[in-house]
Image (tube, helix red, strand yellow):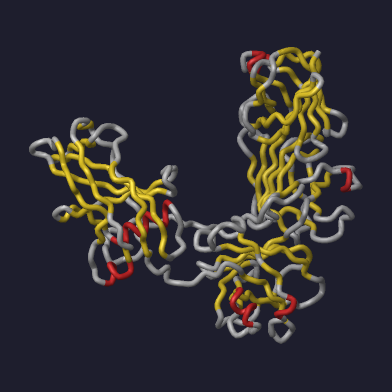
Length: 493
């Protein structure tokens, strides 16, 4: 299966913690409860500011910044206090917004520069600089616990484009980083450097996603050392600034710093290295194209229904297993082999259809399957967390509008001897349908229609996919699990 993009091997949380302290940097945008009602005939006119707002200067001076001025307030209810919230948007359409409170100082609408910086980070970008920031305002009349919106349910005022110089991020994250092999003395071999890809795509700011990854092949029986170099070092042609490693006990993750020595690769073969330059951390995992779950009398892994990946970490797919199985990484059974980590007890679900646990490349114990016969399974394996999960699919049935979504009357599909194809004839299909497993809603398949030609409606099938639309009628149904994406075909009768 062709890889679409790298996915992070390090958990990345960009959410900003709560902060009420004016002097703390980059606090979150704030949200407010919905108003109790509205003053539709009351409104306000605001005049936008034109000068660039420098949040760094305002923060250093410990002062709020003026984001608009009040030029008129009409029909404001007696006995209420005026409050104004500022909405920062990702564009002039305000599809994504962050809201902060303001402080009214005379005719000026002012905001905490830290809060404004946090709202920009939440709605637009975390990359520092001078930005054009879409902004608009919502006005309220408040009294004790009552908060009423001025102008009606959707009323906003003074949509403007503010020029804002944001706060310094506190560290420099470059656009590009390189994985650099080292010799046995730990000296970087800059000419052999491999460019790392941003795990969110090339058009994403490294401040919004500071993770970079590279897939490489590590030779066997060799001490393989490495460092990380920023693009600035590569451009300058020097290894004066490179990041070495301080590894955890298993060597599969650790911290990065210019004071650390070169890291030693703990595994060989196809490897994925992911770094997070904001947290100065890294992780290492295997990066196999596919995995081969081999079970029972099967002697040729090439005949096995494989597990596929989009990110070199999570592998998934349907496959036939017979009680015990082994996970191979190469079709010829060479390379890394995974079995059960028998130091940790696997767990079986209450209904007996599912087993999960941990895998190990140094164990001799085969992996378990929950059903004591040859059966189709949906398998999930995570090579970073070293986990496995197998779900038995003893029966597959067609269910949908054609039978009133009734599990008891769903039409069963018959499996081929190798479980790669499943078929049923003369099935009544309604406007929507799915494939159910085991006569319950724990496991099912849905998908998307891809073609409708010559009386055949074809779908790409996926585990827990959406309801599949169809032209109501009587069909022969066939599922093909031999390739990815899995294919379901309806043939009109």
